[in-house]
Length: 126
Image (cartoon, rainbow, N blue to C red; front, side, top):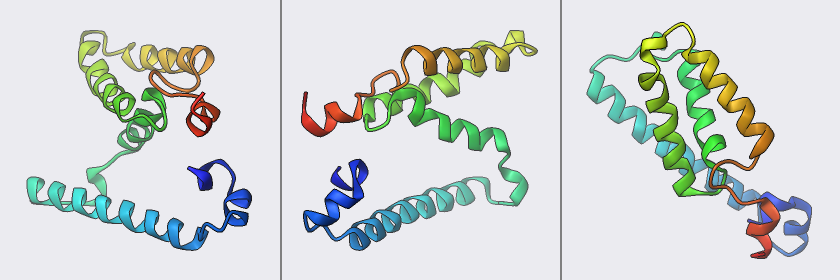
């Protein structure tokens, strides 16, 4: 949490930035590789065309919508981002417009996400 809030202060406090950033990168790469191996085993074929820009945007949007730093928020964000296009399937011409409008409203009225806390609240337990 200290590295996320302020790298300079964390370094002054004696936290080894290189070690923890490398450890974080390694864990995320391992989880990505594990997920990719499950996907390849399930599909039995993988090509660059297996993923489009829409999937990338949805994957990035899920934790932002739910709230960064909140596991519950990420789960709720995933449910919303996966279920919303299916719910609005009958209005196929307007479902992406509705989803975009929802995201804009979220950024205006609740920028920390549905279940996200403001960063200072997480750091200082306000």
